[in-house]
Length: 367
Ligand code: OAD
Image 1 (cartoon, rainbow, N blue to C red):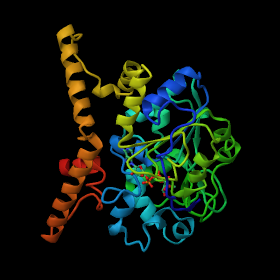
Image 2 (image 1 turned 90 degrees about the horizontal axis):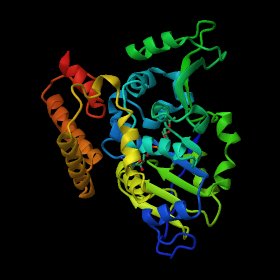
Image 3 (image 1 turned 60 degrees about the vertical axis):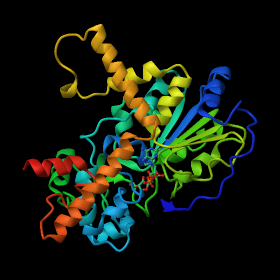
Image 4 (image 1 turned 90 degrees about the vertical axis):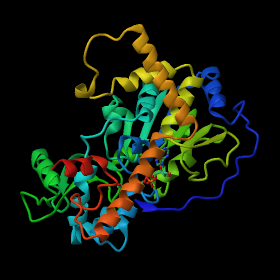
């Protein structure tokens, strides 16, 4: 795994396959051409609205918030040579990244909906949060290109390490050692300097067979994942839904670039496809049991009020007051407040990432 910067793009050319370079144009293409081989490629940006920070966003990204770990280069935290020398920064962070405490976003549910409708060929993810699985997408539809927290091994003798011990180590922020040799244990997530899983290379030809490609929430800076959109055939539409332009997307006549948050983008595409209701229902079903609404069945008026509230939220989103943006502003303000508190000599109970991981900040307040 390594890094690469993006190229300059030009999306002013008229489309050749699409009727328009918009999400509505993509919806028409899907319906009229009976599209059934969609490849989706995602990164950390599809999970930010769940409360998991991405890596490279200024202010809120993990890499700009690792000052307290004393690293020369923040990416060292995921570098295998650095890990051999000093595994502590990774384990300080692992507690906050480990799956189990987050709900899938509507973008995750949209990918599941593509699968339910029989359109998904393969989902390529760089994420290690397992939220696609939690959204209901079967494991064999997902290429976890950067591995996951699901298993762990010794980095020397490669022996497996028990899951319960790993969970305990991560929860305490401790470094686990192999039970068979003095080697370090690491979750099977792919670090810089390590090869991607065989599954990635075995499925790498699929983008070339796709009839539509959707890229969301990734800076496309890390290779070889970043090369995937380029493998999609010429004349096959590629859609980018992201806060910023990345990876040269927009340079082909049938590229559609939608700048903004993924949740708003997928809602818009779902509505254009006539799937708006299906998507909301599917996402609703991902609510954890304990927060499911209790009490008597809702009356027609109450349901109507819910819908009005939902639409009001939608208008807010359309006006640009997105949840993600609001969260960013909150995090930014929290950070400023924390910095002021630090300057005043107060201690910060969550290892310097409380403003990035709001659930930890809350837990620390409650203690
Ligand atoms: P990055 O943090 O590099 O990029 C996230 C992208 O998503 C950026 O372009 C953001 O602008 C965008 N973004 C953030 N929130 C968004 C939202 N709500 N809607 C739309 N776009 C949003 O994350 P990745 O591309 O996933 O490796 O990073 C690639 C790899 O680098 C990661 O897998 C990780 C890291 O080193 C490992 O952990 C092994």
